[in-house]
Length: 244
Length: 110
Image (cartoon, chains in turn yellow, blue):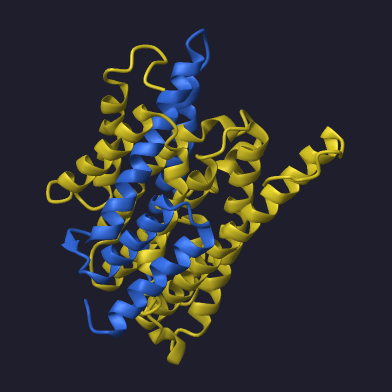
């Protein structure tokens, strides 16, 4: 991101910088989406192996597009739970979309079909890649790139996994590859640069503590939402733009 | 399993409600945003996402639902945390977390 060419024009330097940011962003986003693709592979395979018709995991991935809630829905339904209960459990898991959506609301178009598409592409990953960036153009680029690539690779993974459902690939466990540690690591690596002020750090720390404390008390999915209380700690003792 | 009408209803409900939740955030933000205090509102909205992501990091690192996730995963995330703190590149952070956890599991740690 640093340019050593002092003599080149300002416009060149800016475009160099943007291109370089884009390359880094593209590489990072591809890594995350590839990891998600592997999880999608396992979701498709597990769903078919546990007895759903092939198109069920495929359709779920397109219209729900939220990994954890898809896993839970399929596990509950194939385990004999009522589909209504399975759906509501999935909805609770996705409640975090509301505060995440408020955090990236500035890049969601105001009206039209683009607004609907942008909303559907909101995920932990697209919000996390957007959050540390301040420039509106960079925020838009990060959000759309992550959203679109994730949608493509996640659904491709699920489709291939579902097609291979009965075969040996169905037994590939993302845990063996350590992917369950990769996702919190991704969010951590994206969150830390977004903590610019002391208030941000207080918000994050308190949010983390509240979430852990809420795990025994709330259904799965809601502890992360309860973390919004961390904002109160971030606001406290920061009178009007102070605590920078 | 047999896929009946009640399963269709469940799938449609999950999809529709998830989409509604995704639209609700930007809709709410537009209600509270704007005006002379726009900047402090923006900071508040960003703070909500910061808090939720921090909550996701720790709950995903430590738990599977309500059960403890074992040792291999949290240790992988700790390695990631140290690398983030040392300002290591993103790629290295993520690969090191996955490799640490995979290796610890290979060695028999839960």
